[in-house]
Amino acid sequence: MENAKSWRILAVESSCDESAAAVLDESRGLLAHEIFSQVELHRVFGGVVPELASRDHVRRLLPLVRVVLEESRTRPRDLRGIAYTAGPGLVGALLTGAALARSLAYAWRVPAVGVHHLEGHLLAARLEPEPPPFPQVALLVSGGHTLLVEALAVGRYRVLGQTRDDAAGEAFDKTAKLLGLPYPGGPELARLANEGAAGAFEFPRPMLDRPGLEFSFSGLKTAVLHAVRGRILTDRLRRDVARAVQEAIVDTLVAKALRALDATGLDTLVVCGGVGANRLLRERLAREVRSRGGRVHFPRLELCTDNAAMIAVAGLARLKAGEHDDLGIRARAQWPIESLRPIDP
Ligand code: KG4
Ligand code: ZN
Image (cartoon, rainbow, N blue to C red):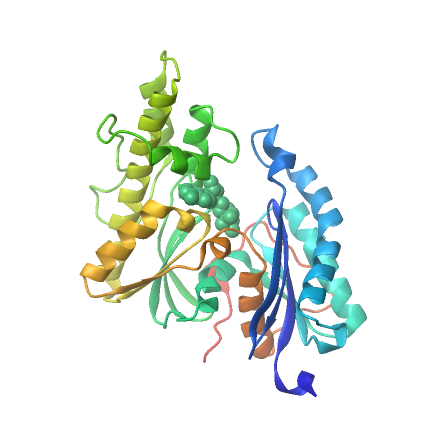
């Protein structure tokens, strides 16, 4: 009975170093979502080791699926589809989730759909009590991507600008590494930054002086390297440099996001991806967008970084529109977000 009324789906995410599963119900909302972070596994290597990530997803995903089904009191026959992350990401890691989702869907006789990871990030804010309306500008800032997107509807995206080199999260992580901070450095650098002295260092705001909506963060590493070269990395030096790094990145992101609102004439900004969890970025954008009469939306912190709830949101929209995969197992390292099929409301 229930099956005929409300759409309920399972989703899995395995594009990088988080294994995650979720159950989303169209009328009752997010019923369960669980994340297993592999951060401990990769810490000694100072970064994600793709082969280890894939092997660990194989171990974690099925138990996570069991947990979310139990938590949400969902039986396989209550499900109307399964969504999985099909790209972009590490191909080996993606294949583990894709193979699992495809196999479960086959066994349970429901459709499976491969979801674009960035569309997941972009739609995560729809899980919040006040979902952002379309059209909107989205600032998508993660460890692998930095994009400004004009989103007109689900699947109808126009890239306004993106990074020419490092992503914003990468800039956090790489400068953190230069400061000797433990992996993953981004959140650690952000934490230290709050204790740093203002004005002790000044780093460049890349591409801010030029028109346009492109980003470039690779120069920041070099600037930090020059600032600390030959000096003893005291706690104070680390804090002060961290503060200046965070300010340079946040200033750049805020300025370009406001510029994108101007360029499109829109007043709704959605911020998503791991760097969207950064407190200074959230505070600055909330203030500046509000003072211009606009509104900024952020997913709650746990839905900014990688998770399966966001994959469920995108997957549900696509499954409901009749989209589903054949029996092939899809995984794409690269996948332009503008090539997605639009889903009109
Ligand atoms: O979206 P995400 O979990 O994974 C990708 O799809 O890349 O983003 C991870 C990125 C990492 O670079 C991490 O350092 C960064 O998000 N990050 C942060 C914060 N929390 C996570 N960067 C700055 N401040 C934070 N609080
Ligand atoms: Zn991500």
